[in-house]
Image (tube, rainbow, N blue to C red; front, side):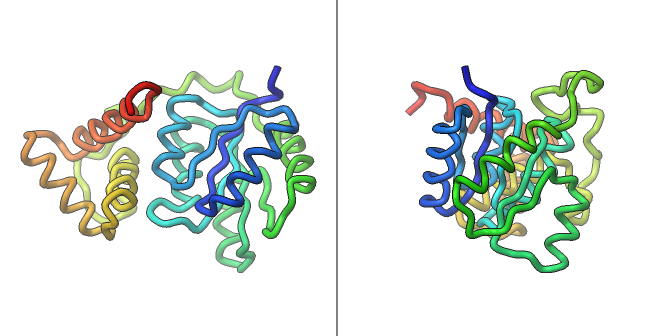
Length: 206
């Protein structure tokens, strides 16, 4: 029986394969993604016990993924990064990561850190079950600056940026156009986009 379910996210395929294999050998069930939007889709579907996140990736960063995991799924996380500047470390602390490991690392260093994270992760008993998607009442009715974007909108933008090589402004323009064509609110169009990709990611949908 697996010790727990871990989501591993890194845009370096070699690092990803090494971590996935090593953690599986250590007795964990491992989910892997090489970008932020796929990571969120996997997290929504499978609800991992812990996430290991690279920080700097195209599209959604590890910080973006961490914020979603914390706010909507209550999944604890730790970071693996080659960067140790003050700004990065400050953001790691602000997000509430269980650990921050500096690359390069080998699996023999990571497994003990993962085991410690499992031992120290918050207990979920006190928290109510998280919905599979953010509740509509939690979504602001207007969209202004980046920080005012509802989380489904921010997630949808990351998906569009990654899959179509768009910058953030282009992705927002496309999402707004789709919402207008469908007669939907921006947040509803974002949720529809996320749900469509979740269906495509299901087994047998290739």
